[in-house]
Amino acid sequence: MPVSRRRHGSLKEDIRKERVRTLSNVLWSSHTTYELKRIIEEENPIVIVTVGATEQHGTHLAINTDTDLGFSLAQRVAQASPIRTLVLPPVWSGFSPHHMDFTGTITLRQSTLFAMVNDIIECLIRHGVERVLLLNSHGGNISLLKTVVDEIGVQHGISPVYVTYWNLISDVIGDIRESEMGGISHACELETSLKMLFSPEDVRQEEIRDVMLDSTPYFGNDMFAPNKYGVYKPFKAWTELGQIGAPSLASKEKGERIADAIIAKFADLIQVVWGGEEAK
Image 1 (tube, one colour):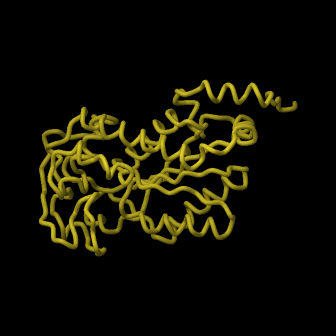
Image 2 (cartoon, one colour):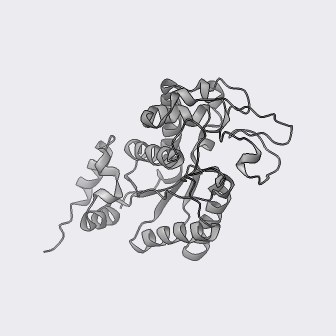
């Protein structure tokens, strides 16, 4: 039975009108093979590949935190995107050897994670996907995923856009956070607020403890610290509890403000990078 093709003009009108998309509509895995073929051929979608981690998040957050936050944000980014966007199932394990002293952490070798993400993107390219957004939600993945993007560009001539989500709001986080430098690091004010928004059942409110570490002019344990050097340490060398920051300042309302800021930045980024291209 032949696959029907819609008229080009009608399709473009639908794309312009469809600003808010249902959850099932943005999930890659919710479509059939024939639906995906049509979407790729006719709409030239952005495909989001989220890469997280399964690792300890202190006394009060579930070990799914990084993967959950990245995937939850990706779905909302796709729904708000000015261009048709699909979200792959998340890569749920990352590079986390520094957390292995804490029970529950699952880490991959760097070579394994590189091969996995590289293979996923190569599959997308084989199916005709031209626009890939790599959304990272774990600090331990940052340098490796940049290498994946470089390799894909060299081998295939396609340039995936790579973003660690919190970097997008570095210019506005000062208006949202209440903690001083060191308060947003791991299982912190930011991550706990987002978990309270997306998955409150994963937050053990009675176990929240602040762990604030001293900073120097050269290094601070904060997502937004202007660090001058990098260093590897097992996480227990930093903290016995497993968290760093000020989760006591977290709230669902703050999570909404953070999520809204991230989603708005992604929508703007998508428009800047791909908005000038015509949908196929």
